[in-house]
Length: 139
Image (cartoon, rainbow, N blue to C red; front, side, top):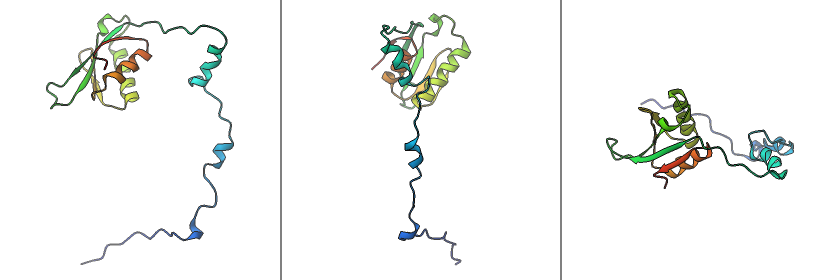
């Protein structure tokens, strides 16, 4: 039998330890808030203006299903027919944003968004944050 070549051993002696912190430069920098961060939005709210609720974009319906999926639960977002200005490309963009934010898989099927996983509360919270009224299974 032939011996396999082993990778070289990593030295663990005191002389091979790091002599500096790779993150030391980051602590000295002052990071300014960006326009999309919550810190940037605080001065507008602190100026005495009353906070306004986002305008409702329409009502979406959530339902939980497991049929024909081997017992795996999915959350289905429907009701896009009643939302003005929502076409197939807007539904696909919303589905992609939901999948990215929730870290799950999903698809758009017959004007409905199908999101993998049994997380209707998180889906409802995300859609409410985008200005939709949400009904159906939300817990």
